[in-house]
Length: 236
Image (cartoon, rainbow, N blue to C red; front, side, top):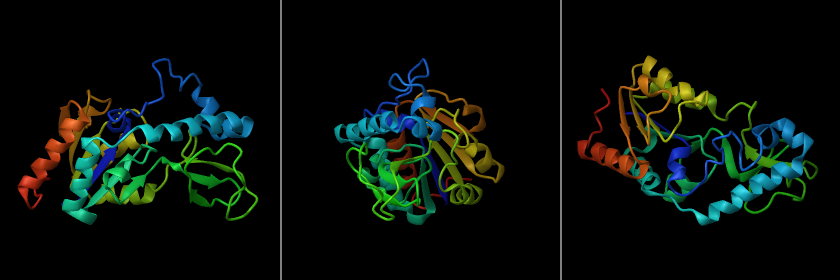
């Protein structure tokens, strides 16, 4: 059975990672347009760098929760038959033991050169960083997908959705595209669909089944169900 799992901010929030977007639409007092667009970086790179430097530093204070650990266990059970796609830019999946994570919105602990497109691992402040180590000239920016940019790995994600038997969405709002449309794409090609979310998402109606509660409780219980089946044949 081929499984695609999509995770969103809800799974990391249970580890203490703030969603950063407040009820009034601000990200820690900033408008989205001021810290999460290419235009913002061109206009005021220092403010953008400080914003992401703070987010990167905050990762040291959080740890993976049981939902992350359960998904790492699922990878051990099914291997290459699992595609784990995350909208999150933190590294909690990897720290829990997952090794094949598809970061569609980029990674906080990665730097991107605006000149040559080179990438490198990055931990610590990026403000006033030296030029790109590859080309020696380019300015570095956070390797995250900003509003107006195309998410990473979309071809591979669509291929996985088309070929999967089970699609599971965990901790997502169902409001941000293209990820919000994944359930409809998977279902159109015959996959069974399951939502695990704290509350009903905007896309709950598209799922065959929805379970609501804390990811740290729902995800381990669901993975345990799959493990008990042995051959993981519950998709159909």
